Length: 351
Length: 212
Image 1 (tube, each protein chain N blue to C red):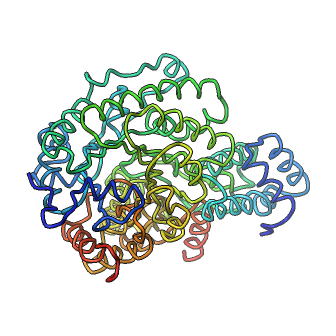
Image 2 (cartoon, rainbow over the protein chains, first blue to last red):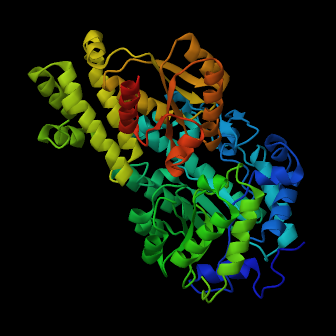
């Protein structure tokens, strides 16, 4: 199995670890967070692709070789977590599946909510995938697992409006929901670590000030993050999934993460200045706009991002949301990869 | 509009702190001084505009936008329908989401529209075919489409094509995350206007109405 890095002195793992140590590796690491594109590689529908671990394993390995990036990403789709709680998953031909009708419809549903059995649910496919990928790459390529935060999961469990109103109007019930979700998040993340995940990406858009108001609720989100991350047995990346980060860098640091996913609506240079030497910046190519970029535009965007945040290490080039949309072409993804190999070599003299 | 008046700023302060009683007190005080249309023009709309702009600037969170919209909607439940209709005309209007289970954007826009005195049809979650059919059947002139997923945003093009085929000249106002992240997308899918937030959506309706 090739990790695509034979011509460079560092393995992807070494490159990423050096970056996380706030040192300059041989080049800027690239996390091309491709999920559904594996279905294109195998000529399968998205639904069929995610039906078997072996398909996702094959898709991830083919994309690693094709795009010469620096991680494997056995994340299936966000709706798989509520699916484990009993929610329906709605499939589409050209995008990630959605959660169907909320699994929590009443106060009773919260009071009776149980942590699902991870090994005997849909989540086991993700664990099988992670184990197989680990067997293929060993310690050469980081494997990034995903866990949605206890604070953000209710958006899919009960719908955004009902969850916001629960936060404001029923603090005791909100707390009860958090306890179940936190236990689930810890067990789910650690099951992935045990299966071979090198790190866990903690998706928590609700602890962004874009979504939750500064004050009691946002503080609660970070308190929950700190408690949860402290129980996850691997390094973590904190991802606000397009939410703004700049004003909460200290809170993310206090929660104990090694990296921070940055929104495309923020200036990467400004964020890097605040994070330099403290937390690795992950981002922030615009995944939505990427769909209509030409290869040349893609290369320019990569060059600009490296110029802004590459110096001194502590920067992993990625998209802003944690998943590349289905509509983004292979041509553009190849251009992104080519550009990071061209301009991302340290020292950054050509950038 | 007097978006920086003390009353408006006090009202905004109560709304973003989710102080329902405080907001109601200010609303009633302004209502007692004049007509409902004046209350909408001088209090509700400016306040929602300040809150919408605050979200754009990062000083207000989406949860606050949502709760503020709901409080304003609750306050407007006492508006005599004729008063609101007289204020804003009676343009056939509808709102929908396309094959998307995320309803928050639609709920916020709906609350802002009701709070602003508009009446409209809520088509809920529909396919492009269902939406085009309903628009034609109801002779809708302006449709607001809220999206969260990129694929849903791209479906607007299909709605546009179906409307053109059926001879409808309904104008399409779009909003939601994909359109915020790619400012060219709304034109690409053939929409007539884009609202980056609820107040921009209300403004876009006014623009569409003036072109009629």
